[in-house]
Amino acid sequence: MCRKNIDDSLLETSRTEKTGISISFTNEKDRSFLTYRGTNAGISIDKVDIEGVKNASHIHMTGYEGSKNHAAYLSLLKRVKAETEATVSFDLGWDPTGEWNPQIKELFPYIDVLFMNETEAIHYGRTKTAQEAAREFAKDCDRVVIKLGSSGSLAIENGKEVFLPAYRVKAVDTTGAGDSFNAGFVYGFLTGKGLEECLACGNACGALNVTAYGGNTGFPDKEGLKEFMGKKKVEETK
Image (tube, rainbow, N blue to C red; front, side, top):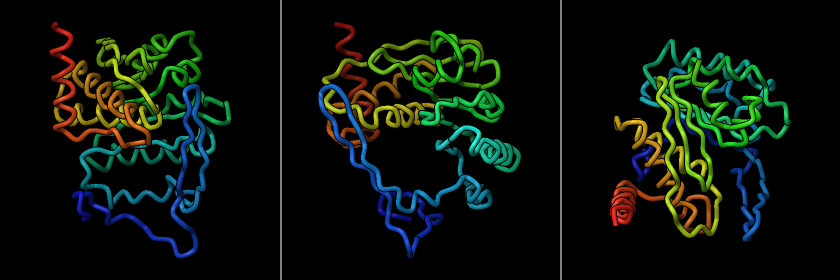
């Protein structure tokens, strides 16, 4: 257990490769990344130790690469649902192959919270809008959440559809905003908050993250999140 109370007992150390690292280059119009994969190149969903994660109450997944590892993800999700009590959130992420594998829907019944951004949703859904895609995905998935960038976010759960506009902040670097949103939403989900409040937590974490340079420099702790949301709520009532 490390100093931040994070269980690191399942981490592995390589004697041949260095730790992977990415450097983000950001300007007012765009951003780019330079990545050394290092040990990340050897990571595979097939290596997940189900016995090792059985004590987890929640599992967050990403790294989906379409048909390349679809079968492995489907197999793992089925095992998680059958052999553990954990809930699962899944951020599909960008598909660099351009395939946008239509088999993705086979994963949905095993996912408790499905995350996509607007562009990903349109591509995977083969729809004109992210909202249309979300409604289609919600037929098979308990909770569909679409990140709409500076416009906010929307979610569908048990037929209930909620849209929440973004918090207005001065953005300097959008690196990590999507992951920060995920963390905020999952925090709300795991603490029993309703769908709208989960979106609010996600929007707040995403907003705070873009106010500082770096992927997580502006990310708040629980008290910082509560303070920010409270302040914004007061501003809205004025």
